[in-house]
Each structure stands twice: as C-alpha cells, then as structure tokens.
Image (cartoon, rainbow, N blue to C red; front, side):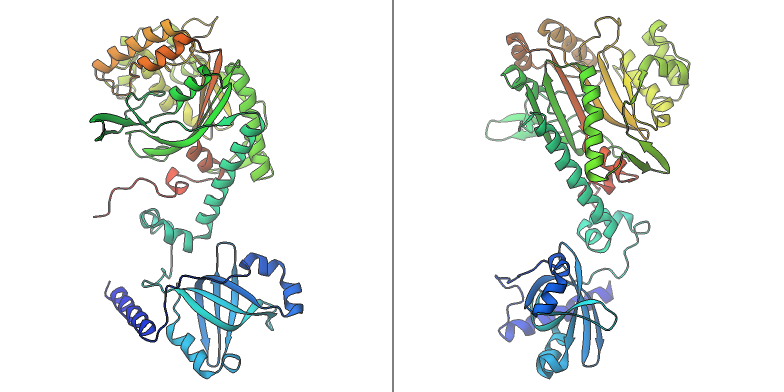
Length: 488
C-alpha cells in the first residue's frame, strides 16, 4: 500500500506539472484516423505510401533504450508497437515523453508505419499527446486463480489484463446477437416489459421488494417476463420475445446470480413439441455462427449439440436414479424419503417441488449430452398446461447439457378457470411458508378471460448458456459485474 501511495503521489506531481505548463492532461478532442486493427490490416499500403497514421489507446508497456524507446499502445481492437526516436523527435520532445508518460496512460500517437529489423510492425512517432493521465498503475501480474475475487470486483482491470476474460465477453455479446438475429429472422418481435411490478409472477422465486414513493406503493423487481409477454399474445402479437434482466432473491453459486439475463419468447398456435424442434435449430444456428461447429468442451466433457436431442421422461429419471415411483407415492411419504436422502424440504412444498429437489440431487448433474427432460408432474410449473393424455403430468420440457439447466419451456395454460384454481393452490402454499409460490394476478386472469390462443413459451438463462459454451466454471466468469458482498 505504501508503494502504491508513492506511485500515486508521483503521478499526481506529473499531473500538476502538466497543468502548470498549460497542457490539459484530459483534453476534449481526439484525432484518430485509424483503429489499430485497421492500421495493421492495411499495413503494406500505408507503409508504402508513407501516409500519416493517428492512433489512440492505452499505453501498455514502455521500454527505454537511451535515445530510442519502444512502447505498446492498445485500443479496443488490437495492440501495436510504437517507436520514440530521439533523433527524429529532437532531444527536448523526446525527454518530455520519457518524463511524463506512464504505463496506463491513454495517448494519441501519430507517425508513419515501418517494420523493425525483427520484422515487427511499428509506428514511428512524429508526435503524441496525453488523452487521459492514469493516477494508479496497472497490476504487474493478474493471476485469475490467485486473485479471482479481485477480478470480479474490479472487472475493468480483469478486462485490461486478462485477454481470455475479454474474449469471453466478446463471445457473450455475439451469442446474444445471434439469438436475436435467429428470432427476428423467424418473425418474432422484440419487446420490452416492466421491471417494476405490483404482482410478481412467471416463475417460482422469491422477489426483491422496494417502494415507489410517488404512488406510495410497494413494488417488486420482476422474477420473469412471462406474464406481460403472454398479455401481448392476448393482444394479438403472435410471436414475441424479450432479452432482459431478471431479479430473484436467491443464493449465489456457480449456476445462480440474483441478477441475471434471460431470453423468453412466446409463440401462438405452437406447442411444447414445436418448441423442442425450434430449440434444436436455434442452438445449432448459434454454435455454427459463433464457433463454426456443433461440438464444445465443458469441464473436460465433449458435448455435441447435433439434433435431435435425447428425450427422457422426468418420472423415469427418478425411478432409475433415486428408486422413486412418483406415480404411486404420497406427498408425505415422498417428503420422508427426501429427508432420509439429506434433502431439506421448505415449508409448504408439495410433491412437484420435492420431486424436483430429488431430481437435482440425483439426476441432473449426470446429464452431459443435450437432453430434453419432459413431462414434469402437475404443480411443477403453475402456468403450464397439463398433458392431454398423460394424467398428472405437464406438457413441458427442460433442456439440460453438461449438468446445467439451460431452458424451461411448456405449452401455456390458457384456461382462465383452471389457472385461477392453480393460483388458489399456490396461495395456500405461500401461506404455509413457501416463499417461491406464484401469487394470484387478477390482471393476468382477466387477460386470459378475454382469450389467449394456444401458445408455447420458452425461457433460457443466457448467463448459463454462455458459461457452458465458453467452458466457464461459474456464472461470475461471464457476467460483467456479478453480485458481490462489499469488500469492507
């Protein structure tokens, strides 16, 4: 800390000297004629023509060798070597650069391109100016395993020093863009729905609560976009989607962050079987566009997304992995077995919730290749439509790959009377202490009473998808600013 304070003090002195000499170390204007990547791409042409090139970026290294000094400048696209030559600049100007420039400063550099004796593409500096004086040094070393918490707390340093981290986020942005492109090319409309809601719904989750002063009203941060998107289906839009932030007051682990990004889309006149085919097509489209192949590696396992994906009954998984016949067991007996398995049961949870906990402990982590887990028990998803022929089961699926739940989807319940009865059951569970129960939403019920066509709904956690596709162990690796406990 003492050394850091001394460095900051020395840089502050330089800053004051610059200002006293009439130089603004944080000027308004920048003249940049080339991105570094473009200058390198057009290098041969620019070298031959001796055209002046002006670049701008952060000073990443500085090596002084008497009357000749080399440095590296990096912008948002690439890095290039620059060359300060005393004979070329003149002694006074050359010494000025050595005195005032520090690693971490943003500079504008102009000059001509040439190749060194070692054939390295370089910019011979004719002049340069400071665009932003840095007060603190960059870390000399940035070891992810050693400083993992600091990387997440100071993501800006992680992005500067860790090329792999930056690459992951570039891939993340590309994945999301290709998802958007795929949906739009299939006639889906991108929409926006409220984040602040008076009734939270669309998922089983505990919400964050806040207060709206202007209306003296308690409101919640949304736990899903589902309800409002389905109201758009009622309103006549047949294919809608939203990519947005979701907030759930839950714990933090490798697969969970209380603030995350989801994709939800709703498709009128389609069912859950249509969604499975569409999901296979969508993921194949993304992988081909972003990676050029359908196979990825995640935590040492090769995962192939070539369709069709395997389909497995939820009931069969529990029978095979946990020796539980869900069709012939009472809720109390199931809870008793779960407790013997070391599974904690929350107050108010019923058969569907307990079965899901058993599945997550005994089955999910074993599912490596992309698999649709189909036909969960009624009650697992209170907004889903029951299967027409499989009694006690839903017309739904979840997509799991690499032991990670990626997608939750189902044919939507559009019977307002049945939906009201399900809400009543959920309210009972809430009163018994189940904090994640769905609350009754009268506005949504009225929308259903006006009539909603047969509809299929699809939800995907984009952070989980990106973590899987980039072989990242934790969501914190692929969320720019993950939720963290304050250091102090």
